[in-house]
Image (cartoon, rainbow, N blue to C red; front, top):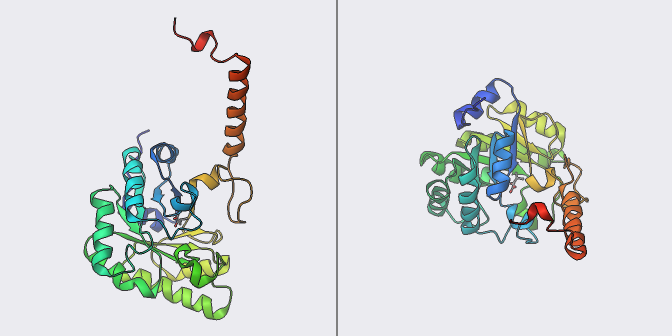
Length: 268
Ligand code: KIV
């Protein structure tokens, strides 16, 4: 059966029908093709690519050029899912002009259909300006990796009354500014539930429990390509790293003992 292209109004319809929304990162052509074929509704070219595929210590070094490069590759593979490009550190914090220019490039050159950016009340002017420029925005609050130094590490946010009140305020501000959805990362499930109940846009959780409108995971984490030690919120649905190592070890063995290539893999 042919699947219908997922659009932003389509995401809102899923939300209004109380159907949970699936979102996954993808950083290159093959991962995007797999996610899209599986039926993922939102595909995110996250700045997590800095750590996951480029081996940076955190997401701060990621540039708009890197996100653009990967968004272009992902866009070539995605035909159904909604493609969201992440705004990396310093691509929007420096002001409205930079934000519109960089987000606009993700749509114009990259083929993204929306952008995601981190922050709450501190970024509402940026979100408003992007939405005015017809650039759909997904917010991202809670454990925002670009704030690693302020947070003192990747720490669960909103554990006490004061910080949970701030996050509720952030969520409402992001919605009011015009975001079509918001990622809730690394917050207690009860707080995510409260925020979800207060908002009229979808909340997409990662480490935020199940009482949200949808879930997002990193492609490599979901498939067990990132190694075995993972944070509590990650569920590995496969163990492809182990499978890949075994396959490569078998290849090495067959090269060494001369059983590869065999007749079947040799031109006649
Ligand atoms: O960069 C990223 O992959 C993200 C998601 C995990 C939400 O921001």
